View 1 (cartoon, rainbow, N blue to C red):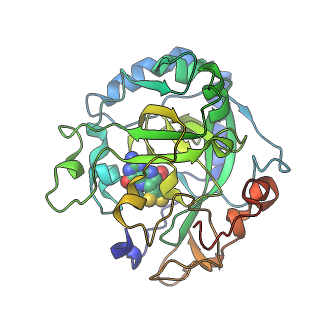
View 2 (view 1 turned 30 degrees about the horizontal axis):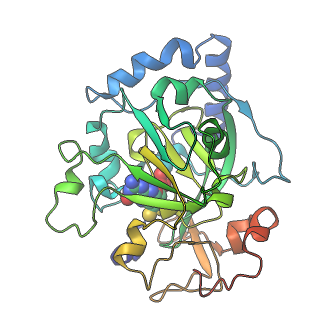
View 3 (view 1 turned 120 degrees about the vertical axis):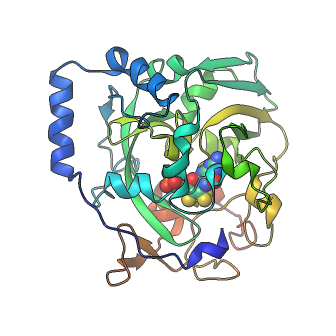
Length: 328
Ligand code: MTE
């Protein structure tokens, strides 16, 4: 990840303006095109290499600033969110996920929930898309590489999912795994990759149950494009982006802290907590500022990074008494 810190400027194509997006969504709603009517057709099309994502979702809009569910900051255009990605299963170049992730079959899909839960089981694609109250949450996403975006996600709280499986008294951590399917993921076949697949992430139970922790199934009102982690990914807005694991197939609830991909690879540089913190620098670069996308060489759009990515009011309590420079 670190190698690519000095990235080339990003093309700032703003083809879908916010206004156009809103109008179109209103139109689709008026036409009654909702998840239940249009979803399955579109998702199965992705299996055949057609443009990814794209089905309209039915959701309410979060407006609660005090909970951190919504920011009025300028949203990063859809084209930047979907073209400038990290999804190493498809390659390490920022354009690789958009170029190659359409090869990933996202229907059928299921998440298996195991471990310290009374009712282990599976959630299938339809349960994920229609079995929870979907809400649009506009969050900041801050990558450890010092770029950031503002994304209108659609999803539901991870806590709502976990409660269905009834965590037991031994539930102290939650581990997540991404799909590992080399035949469809060219990055996992690469001889230069040093990642021990599948991509793994984890949270402490109280972090997992925090209302801000989102299972996203869409962005900009539609199902997730494959490159952004279709059909379901985690979004933990106060942590560096690598915690927000994509295309999840397994959730394991456990007593001990699980191993996670970046920590396993480079423990001195990437910790389990990975809370956004401008005062704790990465060993090889400063975390004091970030490039807010769209950003170009001449207009880098550099802004100060905030503690917990600006969600201090909501989450600081979780880390009371902890030394954030040691537990980075
Ligand atoms: N999940 C998987 N499975 N594989 C990855 O390579 N990259 C992470 C995270 N989730 C990654 C992943 C990183 S480093 C970031 S910054 C975010 O995804 C980027 O999400 P985005 O591409 O949707 O912006």
